Length: 145
Picture 1 (tube, helix red, strand yellow):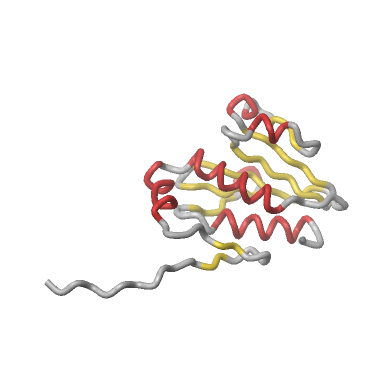
Picture 2: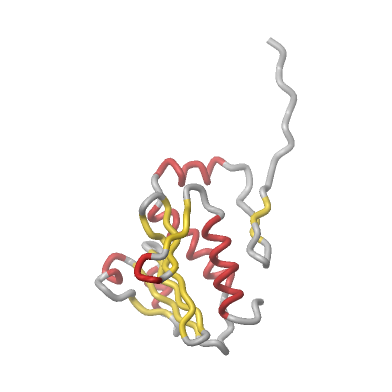
């Protein structure tokens, strides 16, 4: 478990940037991760705490049952966006947030990139440090023609 919100943000940033076609941007002075030109996660540190906003079309209702979650402002909550906020003393549920990052990416990414995730033999493994470890199958030998 990370020691502070800054470490958690770094881990979640690394997880988000490990998806195909993603890049980081800073509109409005806030960190976002986009797939192509669409944002799938807003993230930032505020008052030594962590704040994320994600698009959760499938788990929106259950997410909003959590004490740290609320509908995202600016009308985004009506489209399934959820904002989670953690104080410096809170335990940050990284496994849950990784699952929500995955859901948000899949909700926003082009179908071709999402299909590429399904084709991979095994899901990407992200260590506690947030680094991606590629899971590879051993290559077979080619058949002679």
